[in-house]
Length: 198
Image 1: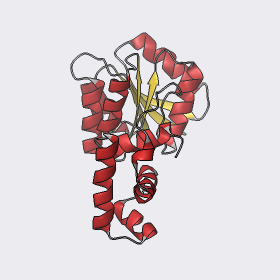
Image 2: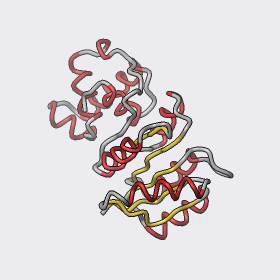
Image 3: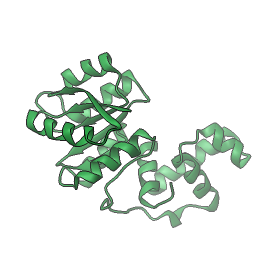
Image 4: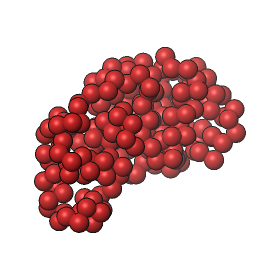
């Protein structure tokens, strides 16, 4: 059973999502919150497998909530479900630690697919998310490091797999981020997902 905390400031919207999710039989909404403060308290109480949150809410935003939740529980899985589906907003949410992003204009099936994807440890993005950054600027070695890091391997794992020192892999990672204009490992993973590499 996938235990979900649902965060949205509209009770009617939450009720609709709850009905959709619980009809599946393998998803249970264990708590609902109308703002980030309440969501954080309920997260600490219920320890859900997954948080589905809007971005626009009274008080703290969903982006601030991502940060607080990740500080409290670095492995927590957060799916953003928002009408603000711009490229910049998506990238910001993923940079802060969200595991997926679904537009509220998507079909209901997209939300269900996203919940199962994120629960399984994958990054979920809408099929329409635009591709970017050309990977051909990477050297063959940088490309290998990029692929391994994007698949969730640590610097140590990469070093072992490629028979390099961790310091060399770290240098490659810095160069890769610079060449591709990426600010974090989350952004790197996002790009790899978009390019169909993971």
